[in-house]
Image (cartoon, rainbow, N blue to C red):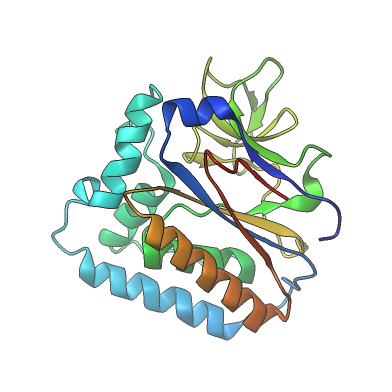
Length: 237
């Protein structure tokens, strides 16, 4: 790592979502400035595959997706109004709206996300404070700037967040990512959390984590650090 990094999930989160689990992949020294055709091809393949497999499928009723919708209900979030990131992504693909290439690190995360039907974040570790990244409920002083910029927002009371210090990185757990900490061509140290549930899609979380690790090593020539977070082991460093 370019500096010490920690990812932590607060105990209160597991009181509401006891089966929540998180695959963890952290990498530093990645060169994200140059196109990597193999990653672009991999992303295109996963989009094309899901376009076929999702034809006629009610995405919200898929077992994995339904797990996130139920979790949103337990968190007091309306999943119809605030669709979790992977449901939104697969819905877009099912409508054959395509999906843009952004940069190699983001494209790789999106390809794995699409392949395994899992929400996968990508956060620039060099933009984080000494506390690293946490999943916790909202606290006084937390602020959010939406992806693409705009006015500063305040979270709802008891809203579940990805946050570094008081900078919210993702609102409503896995709904919308912030402009702060987004992955750009200049990003080289990145943390990828993979959100899932034991008893629902744990094998997919582990497979996605391991494939992401392997492809980062293959295409970027780096050795990622890999871990797993759940109620019994709430911290990854």
